[in-house]
Length: 563
Image (cartoon, rainbow, N blue to C red; front, top):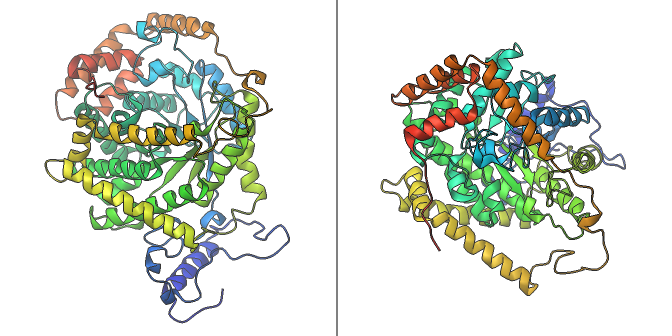
């Protein structure tokens, strides 16, 4: 690009890009079009002063990070391909993990079965018929050993999608890493731990909000001190969107939850510049291509501004919003399921053009069951085709400056700000935390999402919104009956229950029970609970034993009935 007078922001960007290039942080790759045309790493106006409000758009790597976190874009590092996987027992899922990594996956993302998500052991009466069916069954640290056998945890970033019993599951993960001989301080990965979105959308909690927040605060403190690269919270908009929210609601509710976790860290006396980089986000990539791109860009801008201006973050790293994206499960259809490959590709491209840091692409058969090996490979190849063949890695935020995209970005930001004001007004002290807790108790979030879902469903039924193969173009096409889907045998549950019984017989039962009792004692103090819970995991206390002991101490939570 040719230097233009008065383009200070472009000059700053150029200096950062040149520094990254000199430091070897730009990939040695072919940055040309398919026809061989050289392309610049980023593009912008010839005269920044001629674009009103250009400081809100800016250049990649510059506050407010609308156009991405790094001056190099994907020239520095492509997004991480992190395929979500888990089914049956730990051995079966380990085989799928190894296959994904061998096929070019860059990280792991663990799906847990429903008993694990609810803090129940596989032999709990409430687990009957559910073991291994929507993810992998994890009963104790021994299952984690098998799950990651042959996968060095100190060299593999691992995401775990679990919130209610997230902390004990995290402790079991740490034990598995210890048993591999890993230095825990070097671990890198993400734990979801987002309890607010459970009350708002997904409904997988164990206790009332307050004890959950106590555990999350303990986890934040522990990771900040002991495992600095690990991200203890992944604030999840994905499940909010899957429950039926609009893009603006997903954006606003997710960032509001994130602000509340910032308030939690500050209430613990933590330095925002130290703990904020440990907060990551998880968004849905739905099928409205440009709206999704605008949503991701608005999210970065809002987060940067609030962290700096409201919560006092001083460093770029603390102001930067990092996020994982998963393509929209609710956009998949059982009718003409091959169409789902196209939907997923479009959604994945939107996530990439929006600057996602990591990505999972759904398989075409996930509307019916857990993905088959073939469908999982197609989903993986979808990302790899985008990365290797389309040229999207060459230019940072190529849609920046588009009148449409910028207008959508501004509008989603405006709607989100209105929601933030409403949430804070609901609280008794003006904090985001108080407003969210009141909104949960009053059913405000669930009511707003239900209304949005109803409006969209009505538009589908009237034919105002089209879904190919469902309410338009419903003629000949591959049917769901033609698919060979993955089926989890009941034998998985039988074997898991048997293994769990044997494990209890083999362990030092007195030590396990004493460790759980010690953990409960710590729960009655202000001491950090993670070390005591880690000792229980080392003693092979089961997930159900740990969670049941805390249920007995803290009670359970039942959502009030509302219509």
